[in-house]
Image (cartoon, rainbow, N blue to C red):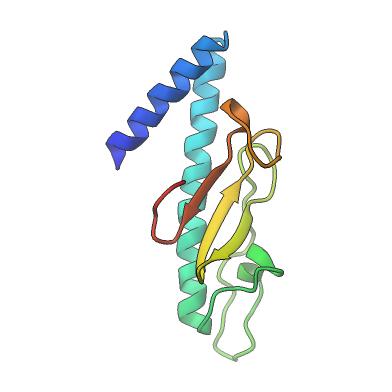
Length: 130
């Protein structure tokens, strides 16, 4: 897995260099991508904890905010105190795909699709990244 991420970092650096980005901007871009991936990994783990505690994943309409709310049962606790924003200061998205949670970020432009700093990032509970 680490090798995959190192290859991805190299691809990002090559893309940034081809776009004429400065080395500092490229390093900041790589850091944002990896920070987003780490956030998504932890969010997925908290979603799994939510399911263990409450028997199902949060409703898509309520989204990740459900992690910050106490459950209906007396012993249900708040899973997280707050939900982090992505490195571009946008909320992470949440959906269920075939009953499994998926967390995503639309990158810097916060729009579906894109490349470079605007690339969409997604991670599913099976930890396969798309």
